[in-house]
Image (cartoon, rainbow, N blue to C red; front, side):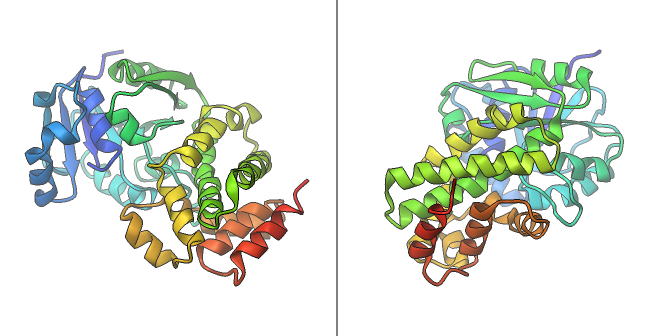
Length: 326
């Protein structure tokens, strides 16, 4: 199959910019943003915002959907919040019918009951979607610090093409054929990180945070069982690997949100301080649906209630909850 010869990154946020930099080592890249002002800002600060080792001259920054798309040799990278994936894919559908799409989004749409990859296929039925998951804190990628991530897809040939065009010395990639499994685990890890951040904000200590992580992983396995997800995925990079990264990193949005809630801020106040999309919040409807179906996820249910300030004695209730864990 013909190699990918170009890439278009839709979304110039914390994840889209470093990925554009890595891709630019191998192919010309167009980095599409939501408006002209943002494009101008990125161009002005190009050296700081794009990876220091990238071939920055190969990156064109512009407002989205202004250039033609060559379906057979162009990789489309979806680097937008999960809440925007369906709308962006619908707009993309008016430009192309069978693109190769790399999805970076992490979340779950409970109304459509599908992952970001599923949202893309709903809008573009012939799209060949590859999902990137695992421990990939964007700031560390931008600094050139090494990690390993997962590329998963139902399309074997596209996995090979995407892995080749992403070849770099920062992210090592492993391959899998169950994208939905990896996407679900990637979405769940944010809930655990919010809980760990809450424990930190409540000054409950490292021991307590470890209890939260342990129980969070147990409940992820229960959800995985509900969705018939292989346990190897939960215990792999998209599961525990991403959980540990998100729970430990000072750059984690989910952890920061949880910390602020633990300090007594409302969800709105916390989101205003984080100033970025927190995917863990978007999982709340999914958690409540699973809870209503009698999936045993008491920690996840508690964290969901805490996000929306439904716990009058957050510290006391959190301690009491952990004493029921077995």
